[in-house]
Length: 253
Image 1 (cartoon, rainbow, N blue to C red):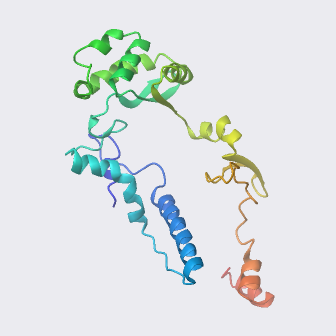
Image 2 (image 1 turned 180 degrees about the vertical axis):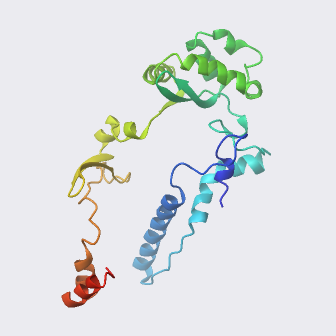
Image 3 (image 1 turned 90 degrees about the horizontal axis):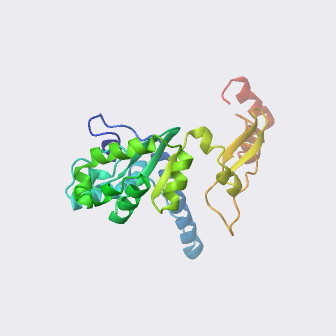
């Protein structure tokens, strides 16, 4: 409903849903900002505000580059798979490695020539068909084929070391088990292990927000279903133990 599916996938395929949860997370993030603003308003004026969030509207800002490409650049085919919108940025794609996939972005002329040199094909950087971005965009299928033939002969780590050392924008496409055991994320405290009473040791991700450089610390594992019923119903809502027991007997809670 916000155009995300229309720009996701390859042009020859049907629209695809986004792989990640977008509306829920973005809606909650905007809601948090709204609540903080309302609290500030209350502190300044003594009056509260009703905060309202539409998940559809919360996703719209993530579409800014596609909306700009459509109305500002006149591009109509915005579903380009892993390429840049409309294919105007070339090379920019996911390429096969010997042990997975990598993403490479070398759209400016200098980085393109640098990439050609480390590929062992310096003549491509001077080829009149590819020397300028406009020409590379017209020949993007051929360029993707040439890069893919080179990347497929090397591992992801080899490619990252080579590309990073030559200041070429790149990244490894990680599988979820790799993400959840990432040494960098563990060192940063973004991933932390907790002992769950039912599941045992589990790795969880924490809030990306840091105060004074310190990662957030989980206060407790996720509670079991119904473990807080007595506190909420009796402690917060004022029910008696007998009333709560009656709800349980009737399988209401």
